[in-house]
Length: 372
Image (cartoon, rainbow, N blue to C red; front, side, top):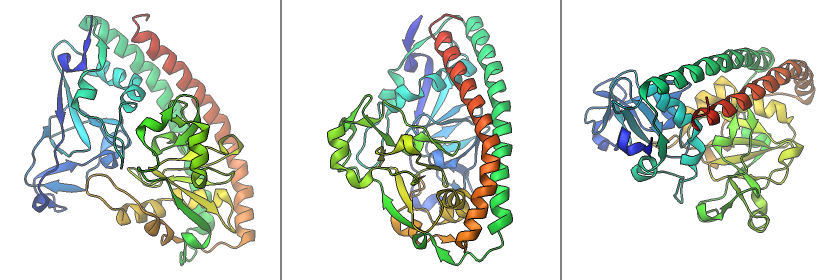
């Protein structure tokens, strides 16, 4: 049976509490304002409210509906849902794990419905009208179990990759962790914020044009463009200031802080999106710059400095003034040499992880076409 999500699932759209109810003292319910309060697979709120409006229950799926549209986390308790999220609670005819995997499969479809000049957002109708195939509960559970097993194998590969990524950070910390962080980012890079919403509209997007790099396209420290989020060559030409050069570091400026990737030869000419900004090295190695902005120290600084109660947001002024370590050219060259050795192993693991991802996507497609 194929129906709409609203027919088999309760959708609770978040609502911002009144400003006078916010606190960081743990009074009231923890507030999930947006995807910035997602940390991996868990909720990690930093604010509380004594006047919660919309509330999640344990077992609900908390879904990001703005900026990082489609990101999701299980609710392990009661939370106040802010306006950047929605709570999904399956009805009796819908298995919760089946719904989780279905949302993963159709995340891009939901994201494509996003609208907004400042940042993309979807509404309750966008979510509720999505068609979903709902077989018998026993079949849903069988499908979910197969996908759970396949996803667990992917998770093990990602754990290996995470340990290898930690090695690159360990090299950085060993060389620069105790250095004086008394320079600023503008001393080693030019900073160009992505185009404002008035320059790049939702209707400008086409398929298989010049890709636009938004925060959702920066994953595992890599730029991963999506042909469905692209613009025509004419539109890209009108936004030449925002086109990528080899060696640029693209930093997400909304949601998760410290999300960044380096533009390689395959990314030259792509566009920096509204939710990102370009760091163009000036007297600095790209890999060193990338390691600086993805370091735990920089992430903490950006989280403390970001603006916005609902969605953490960076502007050019904040980024330019961010502290960076003193690193002469010879130290950067040594760092690049040590990093290259580690990256050879990381690259091999990442290629294997990409194969796992491709196989999982194929399995998902078959599952939700009734072919498993």
